Length: 95
Image (tube, rainbow, N blue to C red):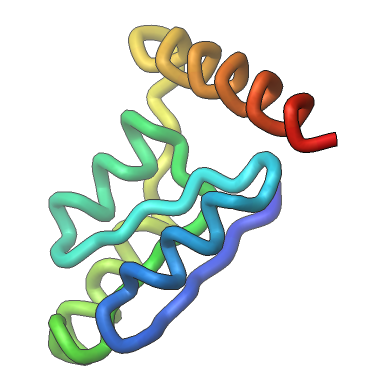
Protein backbone atom coordinates (compact mmCIF):
# COMPACT_ATOMS: atom_id res chain seq x y z
CA UNK A 1 0.00 0.00 0.00
CA UNK A 2 1.06 3.59 -0.58
CA UNK A 3 3.10 5.43 2.03
CA UNK A 4 4.27 9.01 2.35
CA UNK A 5 6.73 11.04 4.36
CA UNK A 6 6.13 14.76 4.90
CA UNK A 7 8.56 17.22 6.47
CA UNK A 8 8.13 20.87 7.41
CA UNK A 9 9.36 23.09 10.24
CA UNK A 10 7.33 21.53 13.05
CA UNK A 11 5.47 18.81 11.14
CA UNK A 12 2.18 20.02 12.62
CA UNK A 13 0.80 21.78 9.55
CA UNK A 14 1.74 18.93 7.24
CA UNK A 15 0.08 16.41 9.54
CA UNK A 16 -3.10 18.46 9.85
CA UNK A 17 -3.30 18.97 6.09
CA UNK A 18 -2.57 15.34 5.26
CA UNK A 19 -5.30 14.11 7.59
CA UNK A 20 -7.86 16.13 5.61
CA UNK A 21 -7.31 13.79 2.66
CA UNK A 22 -9.53 10.71 2.41
CA UNK A 23 -7.79 7.49 3.56
CA UNK A 24 -4.72 9.27 4.94
CA UNK A 25 -3.69 8.36 8.47
CA UNK A 26 -0.82 10.75 9.11
CA UNK A 27 1.17 10.69 12.34
CA UNK A 28 3.52 13.37 13.65
CA UNK A 29 6.49 11.62 15.23
CA UNK A 30 9.37 13.02 17.26
CA UNK A 31 11.24 9.81 18.10
CA UNK A 32 11.47 6.13 17.19
CA UNK A 33 8.95 5.18 19.88
CA UNK A 34 6.18 7.27 18.33
CA UNK A 35 7.21 6.20 14.81
CA UNK A 36 7.03 2.51 15.77
CA UNK A 37 3.63 2.73 17.40
CA UNK A 38 2.20 5.02 14.74
CA UNK A 39 2.62 2.08 12.35
CA UNK A 40 2.12 -0.90 14.67
CA UNK A 41 -0.95 0.30 16.56
CA UNK A 42 -2.48 2.97 14.32
CA UNK A 43 -1.50 1.81 10.83
CA UNK A 44 -0.24 5.28 9.88
CA UNK A 45 0.36 5.49 6.13
CA UNK A 46 1.99 8.93 6.27
CA UNK A 47 4.86 9.90 8.57
CA UNK A 48 5.21 13.60 9.41
CA UNK A 49 8.40 15.07 10.83
CA UNK A 50 9.43 18.51 12.05
CA UNK A 51 12.85 19.52 10.74
CA UNK A 52 13.18 22.29 13.34
CA UNK A 53 12.27 20.14 16.33
CA UNK A 54 14.26 16.96 15.75
CA UNK A 55 17.78 16.37 14.53
CA UNK A 56 18.57 14.87 11.14
CA UNK A 57 19.81 11.73 12.92
CA UNK A 58 16.55 11.30 14.85
CA UNK A 59 14.54 12.03 11.71
CA UNK A 60 16.34 9.33 9.76
CA UNK A 61 15.92 6.87 12.64
CA UNK A 62 12.19 7.64 12.69
CA UNK A 63 11.91 7.04 8.95
CA UNK A 64 13.79 3.73 9.17
CA UNK A 65 11.73 2.53 12.14
CA UNK A 66 8.44 3.53 10.53
CA UNK A 67 9.26 1.97 7.15
CA UNK A 68 10.31 -1.33 8.76
CA UNK A 69 7.21 -1.47 10.96
CA UNK A 70 4.10 -3.48 10.27
CA UNK A 71 0.56 -2.95 11.48
CA UNK A 72 -0.10 -5.53 14.19
CA UNK A 73 -3.75 -5.89 13.21
CA UNK A 74 -6.05 -8.00 15.39
CA UNK A 75 -6.17 -6.06 18.65
CA UNK A 76 -5.82 -2.74 16.81
CA UNK A 77 -8.02 -3.49 13.79
CA UNK A 78 -11.10 -2.38 15.71
CA UNK A 79 -9.53 1.06 16.14
CA UNK A 80 -9.10 1.28 12.37
CA UNK A 81 -12.73 0.25 11.84
CA UNK A 82 -13.85 3.15 14.05
CA UNK A 83 -11.65 5.58 12.14
CA UNK A 84 -13.07 4.29 8.85
CA UNK A 85 -16.62 4.95 10.09
CA UNK A 86 -15.71 8.48 11.17
CA UNK A 87 -13.96 9.10 7.86
CA UNK A 88 -16.88 7.81 5.78
CA UNK A 89 -19.31 9.98 7.74
CA UNK A 90 -17.09 13.05 7.48
CA UNK A 91 -16.52 12.81 3.75
CA UNK A 92 -20.20 12.10 2.99
CA UNK A 93 -21.19 15.33 4.73
CA UNK A 94 -18.82 17.35 2.54
CA UNK A 95 -20.26 16.13 -0.77
